Image (cartoon, rainbow, N blue to C red; front, side):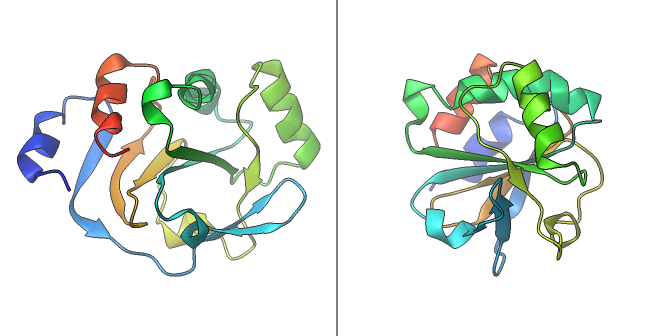
Length: 160
């Protein structure tokens, strides 16, 4: 595990908020495009990003292409990214959004009826929550970020 001193050194990454204490959640579930339920616990052992977005969100549109590229970064081979639409958009509208942005590497997921937006106390979009290999939240990105930023990738690769 990384020390707090290292974590504090990188707080100049735009919109990145590093948790003072790791946060644990019970039963984090979301839906894939076929309405199949997935459980975050199934991805322990991986670095996990949950990105909350909507088709009407302009900053979401700005950051999605760089997040798509992040999935192909060779230094982050243990990374799982789940972009979760919480905007009550239809599957077709979401697919069109991805197609218009030329998103090739990400899948679309949806917030279940019991809403993760409430569970995670989201205040705006986009919001990205980062989980370590033990399934604990260690940081959030409040607002948009350039996921292709080298400083961010270097920092993130320390958790991979």
